[in-house]
Length: 330
Image 1 (spheres, helix red, strand yellow):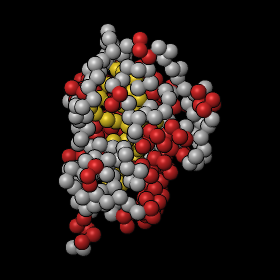
Image 2 (spheres, helix red, strand yellow):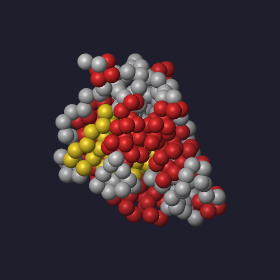
Image 3 (cartoon, helix red, strand yellow):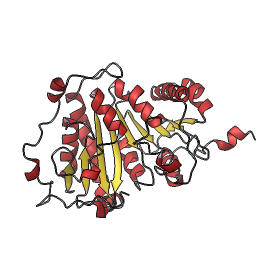
């Protein structure tokens, strides 16, 4: 068997959740990782754009030579057709899993940059992906601590994951919701919703409100209630979104929520419920990278800021949470 065939990631059966779960379970801080070259990133972006519109032949031409396996079938949970590109995972070309619901035009990206490190987040992302027709699930295929930490997809601007956001999805007006997790000891809140480096948006406010309505203690990155280490201020996808007025929402769930089905499933369903109501009311879709609206124009599409952050309390909590900054996040 050719060496190239041996390096391909096995894709199991019809259910895409099996492959997503398997890849997430297999990442390791000791695995190899090499960032794609600029040319490889461009090819990957073009290939994933073809995948998103169901052009599997075009996607295979561009992604196949980069080591991706391309599949399509009907999702057994929804009955909707999907296409999936899975990178190699046993080589340094661990460049991600990209799963597209083809039943409607692409309208949302559900992103998981830290599989295994933020345990079980891929399961939360799968539920949100299935709840929103026309969405893409983008997941790293490498542990955030691999390659001395340079493989962290929320920080690595040379990754396919980041390139997809900054040159394909963001410029086309496709919003991104990133799913993360933190240790219970990090902070007393159960869920944190933020916009990273950017100001509050109606999308983020509505997602936070919907999650809080499920009963979870929910803090917000823009009003002074969230733990400072959970606000995603240095997340590169959030920085790019702020610079270009793209819609980007960062959602953190603590470990107890992520390991309790009765808590995380309603919380994810809350995000899905917020989406149809919030996307049409926010920033117009830009035509390409760098097409940013002025700050004054953006404010009209953003939620009002809290006037007294120090007095704002998290939903369902009597007092702001005590923050701990040196506790593991996972």
